[in-house]
Figure (cartoon, rainbow, N blue to C red):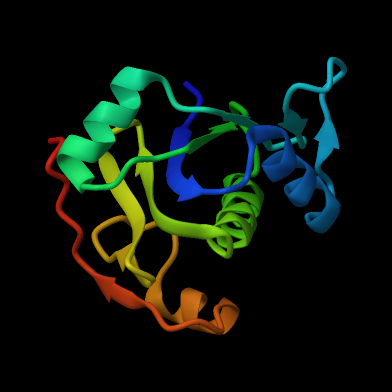
Length: 151
């Protein structure tokens, strides 16, 4: 079973421009044959405008209106460390242009959130740890439990 993560964010970036930004700055990402999404041997990345019901749910639960949805699908039986690294890089690049954002695993578990410029990682989700994050981030962040209101 493939692992799926979704980044919901408020940004001026359009879906195509978001993908162009990622492919120009992350080694190993290529366009799909039809040019509609990005691929790597470990992960597929798609960007779309959120559906109305998704916008409404995110607004009701997290109190912001997303304008962009970025999906990360880890390829089955793959190098999850590489896929996680690509997702981390992509998320950090997109957060540079976002006001508010939330990265969810399977649509309900909070991996990270950024509200009013405050970045926080879920210490209860073990994709990355505090030391790993400190070695890669130059922006301030918190490492704390982020219980999900969706569970």
